Length: 161
Image 1 (spheres, rainbow, N blue to C red):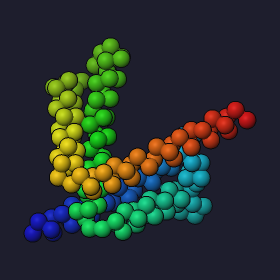
Image 2 (cartoon, rainbow, N blue to C red):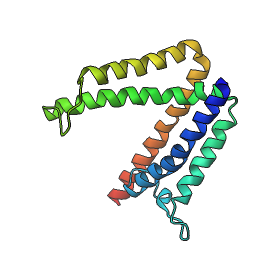
Image 3 (cartoon, rainbow, N blue to C red):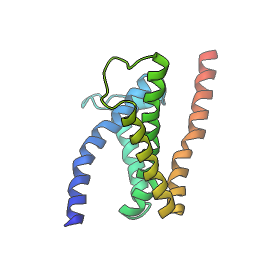
Image 4 (tube, rainbow, N blue to C red):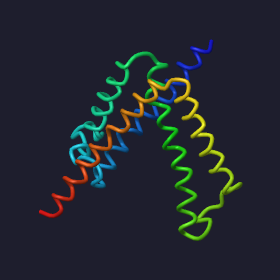
């Protein structure tokens, strides 16, 4: 029964991920913060086809890493690092603006602080439970740093030319 619920939930979430992910890459490419070729639109279907293919290839690589548990351990827990950082970012942005911002958040600042602490607790728990798989997953995220460095250097060189 639990496996059926996980499968049902996964398929429900996949539709949103499949639709949203490539459009994020597409928007980033259009804004000039990701490779320009990812901003291409298919002539007939008007979809970000290159971004969709990139996500499909990367997803396939991740699937080849092993079981659902291994995939979760290596990849998905790393999102909680960024969720926690995002909550802390909200605190920083609101402090810099000198006020609550354009909308009220009930329970502020306790809610984002509790959320950030919870997110980091999930990360710490995962690292303690599976240190090797957690390190592999974090390593996949860290691989993005040299890509980002190359990208920013290339963009700076292109703007200087």
